[in-house]
Image (tube, rainbow, N blue to C red; front, side, top):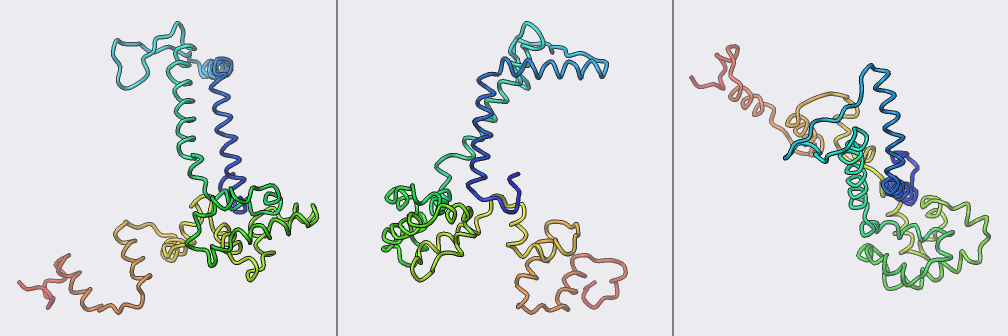
Amino acid sequence: KLQKRDLDILSAVMLIDTCISSVKDLRKDIDNEFTCWYREADELAKTLGTQLLMPRTAGRQNNRGNIAGTDPEEYYKLNIAIPFCDHLSNEMSLRFAKEDRVSLSLLSLLPKHIITTDIDDLIEKLQFWEPDMPASSCLRRELLTWKKQWIDSSTETQDNLTNIIDCLATVDKDIFPNIHLILSIGCVLPITSCEAERSFSALRRTKTYLRSTMGEERLAGLALMNVHSNIEIDIDEILKMFVEFYPRKMFKKSLFIDE
């Protein structure tokens, strides 16, 4: 879902928050949830002609969980299910921390959000892009005018502009230069790098079209040659280096090798 081409940052964050919340709710009700999981695993084990057994516990264990349980179900719940849920919840919360969501402030400029947004709070968040703004001193007046414009508009018009790209098309660059630039930045913020990595780099010239598999050193060399195509290359010098670095019998009579 997060790799869809038309997914915006707000939808992505909402999906992430929902996922984190689901994991936390699952952890709170782990006793009931794990009972269902264990039953399914037990049925699968019976189908395969085996059974779920509790591994031996030792006084000291370094490579796996060692919490003693009265039966296999309790053992796997204490040593696998609970630690996994805690780890997943903590890692996702750290990876998608609230402090790292600066780009969310861009979505407050959408018509359906700006009419209920506190301008002073929004200005504080948008200061992150102040160095890029053409007229940062006029940002407050722009935002107030922008908000007034959409308050006076119809609800239908507001509902039709649900993404940054459509909203950018309605912005007059001469009247709202700062807002136009901020929304332009928002349009090129990818959710993931799964597609952007090649489309934004020269690597696609050697990988996407050739569909070839090669070593890192060779790939880097071809990419540099393509990027710096304006530099003239002495082919004779390259051949000489090749013969010197990789001597073969067929090159014994080469003028480039001193015997």
